[in-house]
Length: 225
Ligand SMILES: [Zn+2]
Ligand SMILES: [Zn+2]
Ligand SMILES: [Zn+2]
Ligand SMILES: [Zn+2]
Image (cartoon, protein in one colour):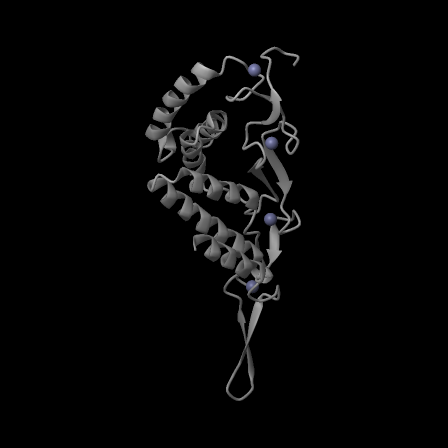
């Protein structure tokens, strides 16, 4: 039933191309809320699936999300990916993060797990050989130009179609003009997707920011397999 609504919701979003960025934000909020609710229920598989969908949107992520995703990945046993998101969390938020204390605890838990099983740097925790991620070429994150504003950082105002004024028709058919409230008459607004930066960093959705992905080759735990 849950999936049925998800599908309906996605279909609904596809039909509304005119306010694309708005929909992306709504989609993000939708999955972000569901992920957090799933974590509270202890349903980390569902949370994992939600977070991955958010990554695929390629939009700016909520600042606390790296910790929440890291915790989720820890719970489902993906310790290396968990580590990379935890590192990212400390890098972005420092001590200012809401989950700073929790993140410190998670760091200790991860150290235990990784020390036990990470004797070999060439394989994942199940003993499968790792290779450089093909999507990001090992860069861990992708810097992409903002498609929404075509890397201009600004977009034409949607309220006044860029005219800067709104036309109102009076009862007698007379027209009155007033300055557009959304753009203050400028006709342009800051791009809502990149927030004026013209480009945005997104985590690689393929390797989840670790730069490497597992193969199906069993590792011999030496440099050359
Ligand atoms: Zn990658
Ligand atoms: Zn306007
Ligand atoms: Zn933009
Ligand atoms: Zn190995």
